Amino acid sequence: MSRQKMNTHTLALTILFGLPLALPGQTLSQQAQSQANSFWNQRLTRCGDTAYVAFKSGEVDAFKNAQIAVQAQPLNEADRLNGWEWKGVTGFTATATRMWVAHETLGVYGPLGWQPWVPGTGPAGMFGIYTASVEKLHGAWRVVPNPVFPLGEMRAFDCSQIPPEQFDPNSALVQHEFREAACRRFMSAGGGIAGWDQVASLRFWMTTIRDRSGQDVPGPGVDPKTCRDDKGNTVLMILAGSLAPPVEAIQVLLGMGLDLNARNNAGETALLLARKAAANLTANGLNPGEPNRVIGLMMNIMDPQPVHKTLKKKSAAPEAVQGTGPELTLWTGIKNGLTAENGYQYFGSALKDAAIPTLKGTVVGSRPACNPKELLVAISDASNAEVSVRLQTPLNGMLQPGVQIEWEGVPSAFTRSPFLLTMETVNSKIKALGMLQVSPCTP
Image 1 (cartoon, one colour):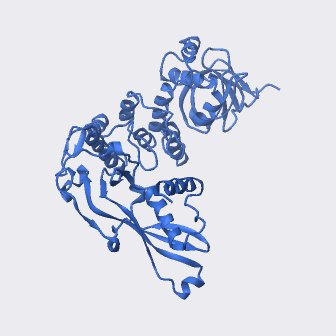
Image 2 (cartoon, helix red, strand yellow; image 1 turned 180 degrees about the vertical axis):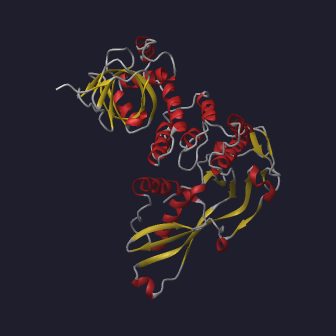
């Protein structure tokens, strides 16, 4: 069988089962070689007579005339009794090898760019970390990488990404590597926005690189639109999910037009992480004010449907209800999201069980009338209830409609027709903006 046909067959089986099946008539050694071929061909990028392996650090290793090798290991009686049918080690050999050095490793390897070619290894001395165990145990083949082999640090690579022979610090490749290195440093620092000037701190990360001597110098730093950690978190997610988020720095990021619908590996958005931070603080009896500010900023930007522009014009609140302050802006964003086509999805993913900052409105009713535990509040006008505020403990007496209140709460339910958002709150989170008239219940 030709190498091309065998590789095609191996690839197809790999896609279906992860590792190739044994071909009819193959010896155990031939089956082991087939397993090794599949394992390495998924990790080596072959371009002409050279194979490449690339890492997230920016390092690229090149191997001239790489050949996949397998060495059998003798089985003893205990191995056979334990179910082993074959075991050995696989790696690859090359006639020469060299490395493309990323900028952060300058002090270790030398100048930036390709290092000189050095002699490769022969069949007896396969590359140290580039080895794996191959074994057939209880009738099933498996390939187990060397524990020190940095599989998790490898990145996708194709022949168009081969670094040039002549190092150019202004090339797109090198600029990309600088940004990747800055991203890794930012994430390893836990999103280090510190100091009295949050905006200056953020801009430092975005405009600074670390040179060969370890000094911070001007250059292409962190790119908030592409930088992610190993869990898929963006710069905005890291900052928004903090218990003490740098609000001013987050405002700068939001002004850059970042995708608020971006999700990490766990499916979480920056808004959801901010809500978790607020809920965490609330559950521990701490003030969630800063996370709530971040939540408000993001909710004001979210615009699920183009129709929102029309809705905003129709829902402008009169001065008597809540003026033109941040409470009105916050409510407009919430209502626009709820009245959009995907309003129920918006409620479930962005509002339900999340701490909402202060809102203002006019009480237009209460339930029950005597000792009410639920206040019906109008926000967009002074007569139509839009929010049901459920109290932790009932009021003592009958509440006269028309009083203006402000409150903080957690949405628990929503209906579109009739429109009503239900929010749970503790009595201490409600404040009357005028005289609160509560009269005794009449028989």
